[in-house]
Image 1 (cartoon, rainbow, N blue to C red):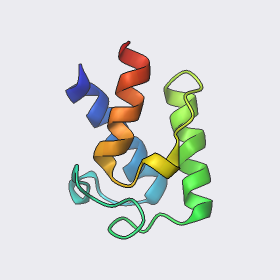
Image 2: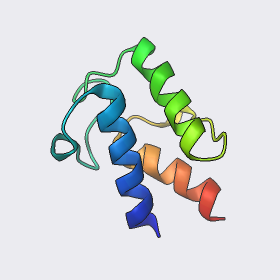
Image 3: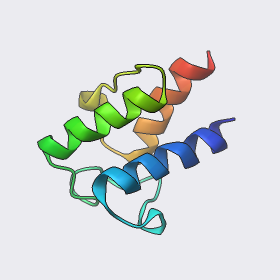
Amino acid sequence: MENMMSMAVYLVIADTLDIDVDEIYPDSNLKQDLGMTSAVQHELDQSIMEMFNNFQVDFSRANTVRDLVRQIANVTVH
């Protein structure tokens, strides 16, 4: 289940940051590696809310793609 969740999150990140999904890795830092700005963070948060039943990411605890996937998986799977 988490693998499918990961792919969905990767696709949302790729679409929001306008990058190729192949450029995204679990350890990719959202800001340093993927270039997420505060404006893009807001867009990403909105996209995640739309896709995952209004789930709001705690970006203070999500530095990497893995962190982001785990937050979403922990809430939507449980």
